Every structure is written in structure tokens, then in C-alpha cells.
Length: 162
Image 1 (cartoon, one colour):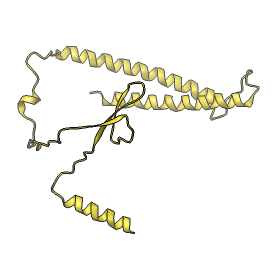
Image 2: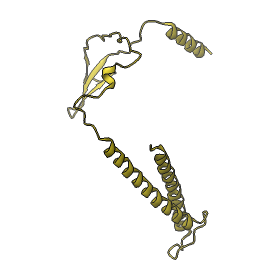
Image 3: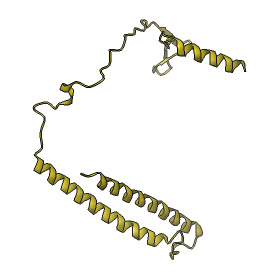
Image 4: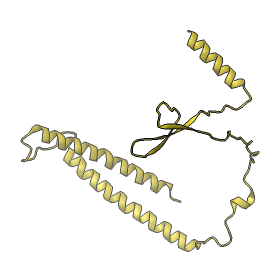
């Protein structure tokens, strides 16, 4: 109960405080037997020396602008431009590539579904051990899920094209 009250008191105090909080503690440089240097915030060993650091300085943040300036929104004059017909050809090529990938992934998905057979794939001759059969079934299930996600992603990508 006391901890809860202390936490609430500290929370309230921090929320109404106008002064920023600083987290600065002593820093020690420790050198191990191999000569490796390491900085720590505790210097419990004899191989550590306290490092004197200058005090932390703070600067107020500059006033933020609500809208970006027109200059930052424009491209530099030497920025390379692409002709509209070239861009349309590129977009067309991209769409064709995505459609080809989708067709191949759908064929792969159909093959995996056929082999998976609703979780009851046909046992192969080298699967006399039931554990091998279960392992192949689990792999097929993972492949099926991955292929379904690939098909969804390709369809989504094609839907996003202009």
C-alpha cells in the first residue's frame, strides 16, 4: 500500500513538474587484466577510476512549424525526371511481372493443397517411421500457409497499382 501511494505521489509530482528530469550518475573507466577498457556506472573494483565529465547542458527545442516550407517539398532542379511514357511502360512491366508471380504462386498453392490433402497426405514408401510422416505433414502445412500469404500479398500489391 505504501509503495502504491509513493508511486502515485511521484507520478503526480512528475506530471505537474515543469523542470526537466536529468539522469546523470558517476561514470567509471574500468580496465580488466587483458587491458580491455569498459565504462560502467559502478566502480566497485580497484581497476576502476572515476571519470570527470562536464555537466550536462540542455537547449530548448526550436519552435516547430505546422506545415513544411514550399522549398522542402520541391525537388532540386538537377533531380532526374522520368518521362510519362517511360513510367507507364515501367508500371506495365511491373504489373505483368506481378501477375506472372501470382499465377506461379497460385499453381504452387494448388499443388501443395493437393499433396497436403486436408492434413492427411498420402504416406510415401520411405516413411515407415510415423515421425517422418508427421514431420513432412508439418512442413506441408507450413508451406501451405506461406504460399497462401504470398498469394494474398501479391493480390494486395496488384490492387495497389494505379
